[in-house]
Image 1 (tube, rainbow, N blue to C red):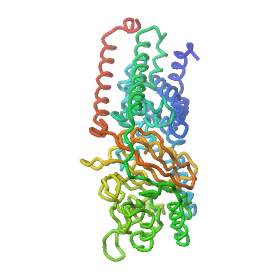
Image 2: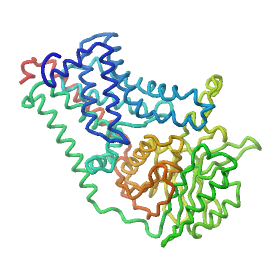
Image 3: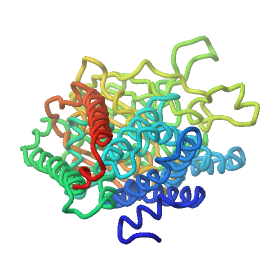
Image 4: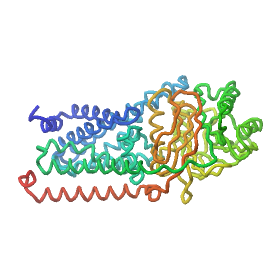
Amino acid sequence: MKGRGLSGASAWLGGLSPWRACAAAFVAGVGACLALAPLHWAPVLLFSFTTLIWLMDGVSTVTGWRGARAAAARGWWFGFGFFLPGLYWTGFALTVDPESFGVFIPVAVLALPAGLALLYALALALARPSWRAASAARIPLLAVCWSIGEWLRGHLFTGFPWNLIGYVWSADAAPLMNVLQSASFLGIYGLGLITLLIAGLPAVLANGGVGQPRVALPLLGGVILLAGLSVYGASRLAQPAPADVDGVRLRIVQPSIAQAAKWLPEQRAAIFRTLMDLSSTPSALPPTHIIWPEAATPFFLQQSEAALAQMARLVPASGAVITGAPRLGDGNAGASPVYNSVLAVDGDGGVAAIYDKAHLVPFGEYLPFPAIFSAIGLKKLTADLGSFSAGPGPQTLHAPGIPDFSPLICYEIIFPEQIIAQGVRPAWILNVTNDAWFGDTSGPQQHLVQARMRAVEQGLPLIRAANNGISGVFDAYGRNRGQLVLNQRGIIDTALPGALHATLYALYGNYVFYFLILLFVAVITTINRLSSTHTPELLNK
């Protein structure tokens, strides 16, 4: 290895042969994944993105197609390393019916990370023409390119914004929770952009001693930025919490039904009895509203007057049981659409409100390009109910005796721009889900932290009911007020936390993120222009 210390490490990484450079990028990508749930080893990002920057330095002078290809290879291998351990749980869903889906497990585990990594291959290929080794501009350049890749991942082909970098802050530890509060104005994409900027700053240490301005100034700026976000978050959390909603007592039910048994006809009565028994657990303060998870009833609830009548007896006349359930829509006999829905059953046994899931899971709830995939023997996972139909989009529901709420089913909660119906602000967010598909893996924990982020972004409390997964209650700051762990059968009795005034993100969405992208581009352009008009001797002073 040439040189010493960090400058030597930078030169060594930049001088690696193509395959060794790709291997190093893969290891760095794996490291970046460790910063997310369930581990939240946030400092690892400093190693991972600094390594990626130094690897990119090695191809900064390679021009034309060769340079673009080399940069894309490093980006792809980093992305593949990042997604492979982060999304391995997708293969677990296929083990529920191994005879039908077992052959596709390698495809799910490998093809999805490989496909998502293409976005970061493209991002670094596009960054390479503006990349200047040893220039401070390459740090915001990487942050911009990666963040645009994340935004595209959240929007292309129905979107899959899972494990965005900004989720590194979504944990109970106080230092992380403080920075998490900045999502109230930055949103998840803006928080990710700032996180990437900070994560890449150690790369300047290879440029000389900390006494040199071109090293000291970026590092000092990063420290001030991180400290500012932390102070903002601490001051926000120090504010008095909104009062709980008067007269509302919630009971969240987590039945923990194994996915393999969920849709067996002979299990329907037992599953419904489990839900009823948990809901009927004696309490000093009986609940006014009971929350059941996604598809809690393994039958069409509206077609069962007996089930509706039993559910009505669980709550007072002014209350409701709010549950996930499959629903038959209107249509000709034998051709009715099927919806994955949330129903509010009132104290008289009537259905007072309905929400139909709008953002369906490809291959889980419907089969895209059915002619192509059916030809190779692939079918959707929820084959018992056929393909679901999509609802119209976000809604604000009204149920008896409780403030209006925004219902979101399963992975709808990971799409930050599709949380609240336009023009109508609810008082709380409800997320019903069934993470039993993913077993005892990191998937349910990753899903939880993404749901929690929506509470901070919107300034609204989040109530979450999982069949199996992690049910919980989070206030409008995203603070944990109680939860049931993975594989636990039980209930949570809780008040409904109050809402905050609409946050900047709730008012303006991703416009702050778009502004920051433009600001970063202006900074990158300015630094590159200055570097082209000054001699290296002046820049080193």
